[in-house]
Figure (cartoon, rainbow, N blue to C red):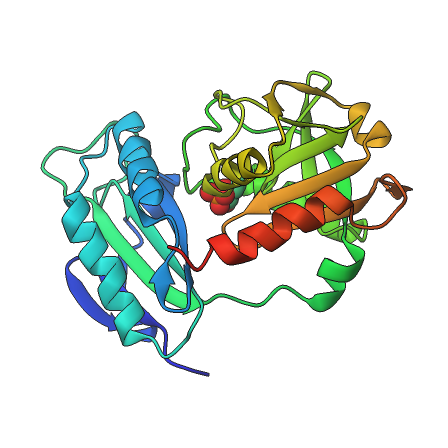
Length: 282
Ligand SMILES: Cc1ncc(COP(=O)(O)O)c(C=O)c1O
């Protein structure tokens, strides 16, 4: 396996050489935030919006941003340079740092910064041809899903229950509304119109979501950013899930019921094709 280049507290090193204290608050409390930046053809995709979201996540949890925008760009670029892979997923994590275990913020502790550049796996042909299965789960997350925090246990449990039901992704439902996936945003096509949950505190403001909205604009297709009743999932003509790791995938079953005619839809294909071009523009 190719070596995975990593970065830990101002030093570049192979992933295996990274050592982090068990007293790190990321380990002890899940006290940190993260980002995942896709890299296509060795060029980071939507780097600026990812860095803006990272800065916002840090600010929301009161961790001082350890680097300037320019410095973050340099770290991402160096990791890309050190990797042999063409398409990458650059993962960044910042925690509140190392301190004796106590809930209150420690004084005089600097954040732990970790990053690594992994291979970005291709999407399986079968998922593109046939679409993926979704499984509905109750959203048990907190009320600040807009912050990209590293505590992902509810997402992990949701995803696992979907996998056990033979599905590729879980769709989180709260108070009768379908919000997003365990690691993706959700789009619903209904009677020729597109819907996605608005950017509020109940979903992660996905960078791919924004790109898809932009591409829908190019196609002259209006998208309504509004709450989506759960039953719309069963009445949809098309369902899509979007994320930096997987781009845009069509979902063709939800809780084992076919979506539309049970095949990836025409609008998905049009948006998917545009996304394939867009992702090489950086
Ligand atoms: C809960 C959740 N929603 C949506 C997304 C998609 O966000 P992005 O398009 O920025 O990858 C993710 C990605 O990790 C996520 O974890």
